[in-house]
Image (cartoon, rainbow, N blue to C red; front, side, top):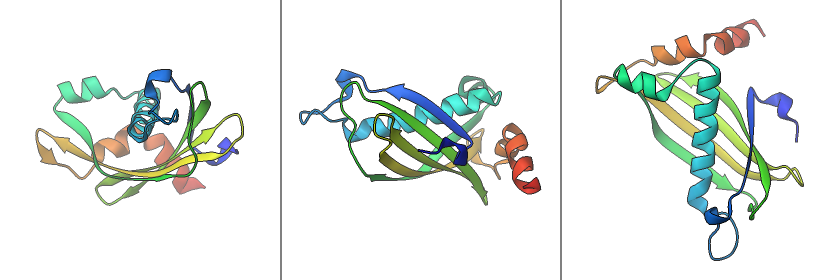
Length: 141
């Protein structure tokens, strides 16, 4: 697993209560892992979901596509890796989850996020501001 091809990576571990009756991670928990990594990534760039909401700004998932490749089991350690790009008003997160023990791809996801301010869809200017350093680096590379 080469994390250098991603702009962010967060390591986590499976907790026993996240398992289903087959002793693998229940599919719904992968969305939680993906979301937790996005929030940690946002906070690392000076953003806060709580502060944005208090200001009337709400980034919201508008579409998510997940491909399940291999399961995680209790106690497994894994990394959620992120890349992102702008597509019109949307911020698109391309997220992969890898099992750290065997470096197998576990999940491949595409998460489309829009930004709503005071209940109205915006052009996503907030994304440009919060992630200006990343988007500026993409333009120079």
